[in-house]
Image (cartoon, rainbow, N blue to C red; front, side, top):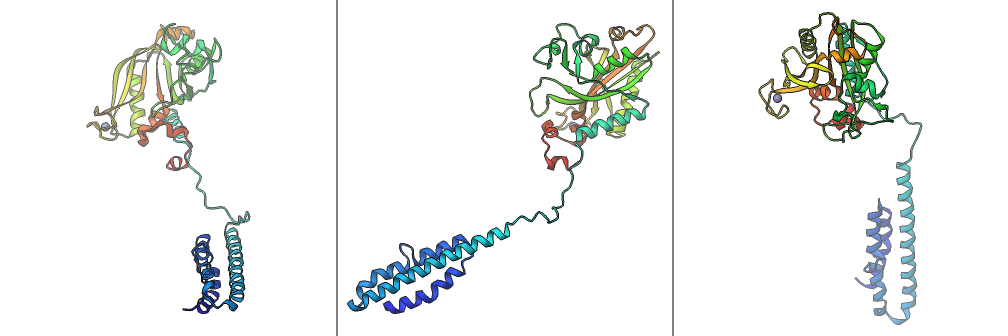
Length: 337
Ligand SMILES: [Zn+2]
């Protein structure tokens, strides 16, 4: 192909190639193919030396205007690609919104309501109290000895010397016992605070449901009956309940209550660390000292109390393996409930 033929080929092909470029990448390719450092127009300039002397200025001019023409086309195409793109991205506020599924309630709030309604169905009332409590209602009245570690600044958020963020909902029971006469039969659901470091099984803010029953001739059998009824209703009829001796300052005797593992049915699996049992709550007979602190005659009245962590119950029920999910507000998590 001689110089003239090459020139005509470029002149007829280049505009098509530039104008069919759909994006910046294709346009860049066309640019370097024609007017880049190794482009065909650029190399044709180098061949000017091979054509007859008198025709050289003419072809030089023609080549320059061809180069200019290609440059203009590229610029033009670049603008139209940009315009097309912004047309596609145009935000039309009048369009209807995408279908949005409202995530369910937080499973902790939901579980707290479920537990509370189960006890209501057994004749319990519901009591609430403030989250900022006196040191007396949170510890002293509940028979916590002066040197108990829970009283430590490291374990409790103190507002000042006498006020703190309650570490359990037990002070609600104290308030009710001080303000009303027995019999008492109530549950106290609500938020609690402890200086726990956030990890897979601890939250510094969590929820509890605690229960209290004070009457004449209340025995440990009543406690067992009520809690067994609760575990069967909440976790299903096949679940077994076990009471293990334990210690709490405010109950005597005290017990930790386990249910048979809901995953392996008591055979032993990774969720129950091979034991076949899962701990769900603490309970016991109200210590006579606590009754006295609230002005209740310990010779006439007895009672039992129990307390459970709501997040823990929800984790067991729904198979949630990290407590932090409850506070992350992740739509993907919340939508499952
Ligand atoms: Zn198991």
